[in-house]
Length: 416
Ligand code: EPZ
Image (cartoon, rainbow, N blue to C red; front, side, top):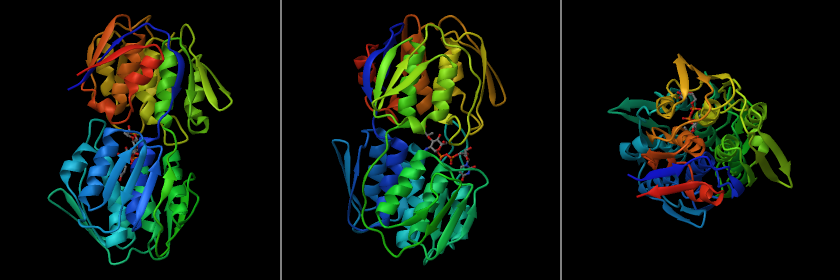
């Protein structure tokens, strides 16, 4: 397993370009299932999760090719309707083939995703929605077996906003018979990106980005040719890296309108963020101020930035309260930050972070994608050397992160 070694204390300087968003590209790839022909997706990051989804689509009989940040998907015919456990257990987003496969072929057999490091993460809301659209679903030996001659439009209310649940049902509804209303739908930018892609394929969708989405089923969709949005969490992670090292960087390609809650909290913590001819300029203060956050569905503060922000608060002036309201176990990074000297106490879903002067480098272990990002941010600021183990978690969601950080002056290297 690769490790990453960082010698901290260097103020980051220079310019970085943000890659395409993993959580936009994954549903865009499964949207291609809804059409028969050749689809292209642009601005694709070279990530493990993208390759895993590509392999899954190839398993279903589709042609998949990724080169120079562009995916070619050939979805002429489906030769399997089965998404086996091997794929789903490595990447929960595999569940995004369920809606499109069922809508296109009338059948789908998808392994139930196991839990994962950050929580149980059931998919009951995905299943509830498909049943409302007329699907017959039974769960056997860890698999979801879904059947539907023709899905029909329905009004579906989500008990809580679910990103991939909204995406799965929006895709299924786009070629169903009649109109579907999704209520309490997720509003994330990646949901809007998927809706825009489906509309470019000929779908009739209104309201994406709000909590009520209306989808009027059409008989068929054209293949897609679409450019994914930039990764808002990668953008925010680089802001955190500049903030914590007292750096001064420029970020190309980030979309400030996708990270308003984060920018507002970063400014409260003393980070100077300005937008100059479409580039974000980020200047970190000599000492960060402590700020309270509570993770919420979009447009609130995203759960995917909770760990990275906690790392910043670990060396801020004062005490901050960090409440994780989306996942039940997303504090796996706390034990690792404590090894670096952080003073963090957890009570239920709230962590109390008492700012200390500086973190100390140490050997630490990544447990999930965003926790590993928080350890990189910690290593950049810590005195001495930090070695992060199990960086395959990092490779799932960050394209060439050590090269990008090296370009900003960080002393960082990958140990094979
Ligand atoms: C998406 O996961 C993202 N993944 C996650 O990013 C992100 O953390 C999460 O949304 C929240 O923003 C992708 O887009 C591929 P949810 P998803 O369904 O869709 C509960 C990363 O780091 N829930 O919005 O799986 C669930 O347990 C990943 O890139 C149900 O109870 O998240 C959670 O508490 C990590 N039943 C809450 O809703 C359901 O049927 C939100 O989950 C579905 C969800």
